[in-house]
Length: 299
Image (cartoon, rainbow, N blue to C red; front, side, top):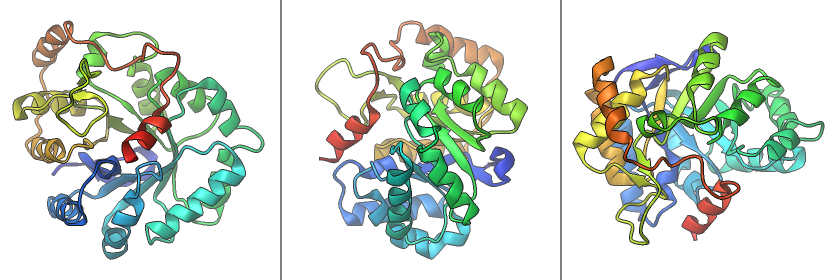
């Protein structure tokens, strides 16, 4: 699988990042181990995990310990204060059986209020910077579904990476709260690594019946996944996180191995088709509480 440099981190990440959210949904230990083994054998070298993903850290711990030298481990926190973040960071290190994180990210910072708290005098960032000074963290990043918030954050701290939604349905329905282009441009200028998420998101679920282990409606055929993922990877991003649905995640890995940049005409065709889709972001309610989504799924 092709590898790209993750900005100023210097790490060459595979086109697909193994997303830990895949273990939010009920899977047996045997299924979990089989999938991790599958992904690692396909060469994936970038792991994304968070405490909000149920018991994912515990399930991944033995794998991280065994393959630590070959895996770029990226963890995240939804805590916003210095004390809570320090406690969670150390707990994650223990669960994942590692002495350090290659990347530690402020997670799901979708509101301006939480961003202000996290970057404040006694905020989460203080704990993360301290951890970096102690060599517990090598690089610092931010994740958000709100590009406006990321731009605000980048103006207040020298982040090494950003993680945000990049897909063709959003591109076909641009507005300030889902337009990722300004972030990609600024990231390129500042040599910030870009990790894309929701590459294969078609939109919100329109019925109560859900056929996939995802909180959004994904594309589900290999052809659709090829098109969606290739569009995302044609943009100036380093890597895309895998779906939380194991079957779809495998199709994403397959698509990444066959990746070829889309021509402008091919991208335009996808955008024309997406005009009839409803974009996942921005959410129509006041805010997207991603933490509650993860908790409800984990239960």
